[in-house]
Image 1: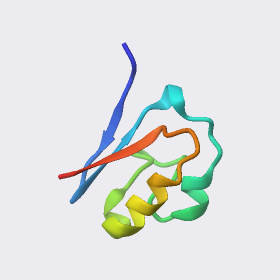
Image 2 (image 1 turned 90 degrees about the horizontal axis):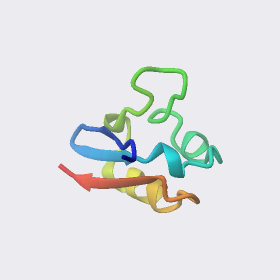
Image 3 (image 1 turned 90 degrees about the vertical axis):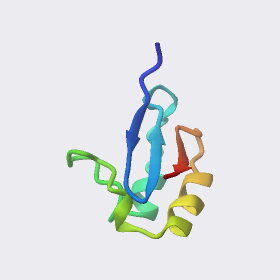
Image 4 (image 1 turned 60 degrees about the vertical axis):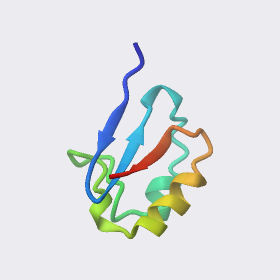
Length: 69
């Protein structure tokens, strides 16, 4: 079974670790949201929904997706 992590706020970020190539685009684009050394490493309340959608749509591995809560 594939591990899927969900990070919820006003907007839900979904991460599929097995697909992630760790390109780092998420961290470089929205460092206030993605903090790999923090727990949880995603805080979707630290950016607007439009910023999150734009960044997630540019994820090269498609490991990140979203669902509007």
